[in-house]
Length: 461
Image 1: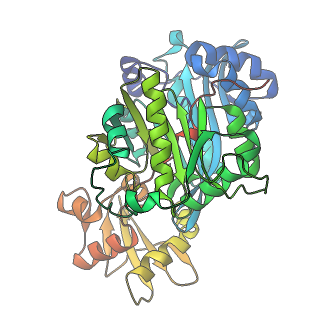
Image 2: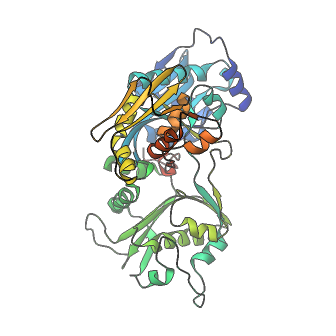
């Protein structure tokens, strides 16, 4: 999510969190197209990266509405701002609609006056009324949002690696033995495949990127579903510096609509590879793309690069062998991805196909019923081949006691149930409860591709 950090320093955030009596004259109103000039001026003072090209790109984003901005005004000036950006993401066998809370900020002279709390309160009320299922936000103040019922829902997934060591690993000397890699063909067998050429993407080849991305993210957890219109907007928005493509055979390919000769692409921004996608049948395509990025980085005198990847990507083994450092923590430089579930009953219905896939993978099955206790209320999750139901009540055989944020972590695949029970973070009625909860809610790392959220470098206006 672009520009999703809370626009205040840590002391201001603490003062805001501790504010008990918010001023009654703080009114939050939806934005209109007439507010765009004032909003841009506000963003230029609070989020400089959103002032020019990125703000223009926001206005052209598919499904953008001026009313998605929530504002606090002082006369004609915008003093507080928050934007709600709806998306659909992959979640295994399900498609999960989410709403991203972005560009949360207040003017420096208004910090500590409760503006952020009011904005977030209005945003949650709006999402609840619209029956949005899940809110997502990225913040540098997770403690502030945790007190408001939000919870960390993902870990970061990127690597820091030296260019020289990685390039040496990707391009060993001709006489060096080439050991086979786990989960992919050896480099020796890859050389027998058709030659790959690496060059920059041409705008007309956009369909190839969409095809490769759809194939790789099928069954992923967190990848944005990108329509044709969204892809065009994403490319025009240019949250990247350049995009490389790996082409099988001649670099001059036929205009066949799908550009089947393109087997992979890599989007790069400065010293960061922000999206790497390739055909699973050609693991060497990803390696060639990364090698090209390394060579170009060295020409720019960049010694270390960052590669954003889900940590189950086959290339992670290469990065580890190259001495790369993996970042797989909930916090990275204070940044965290947080979530809040607003309608558990509708969310479990949306996840029905995903639940069925999990149950079937465990072997023969029948109806599943798992009880939850949150505070002084009981709920029952009932799963059958035809439906998922979330109803009030107390289950007799299986009950898991947790709070609402932990329920959100369960539903989004972030909570390790056996470990949480052993640590006393949640309590289970019996061993069968733990086994059933672990079957229905295994850990599934949520990973959102950064390309969707990086601020625009330039945008056609």
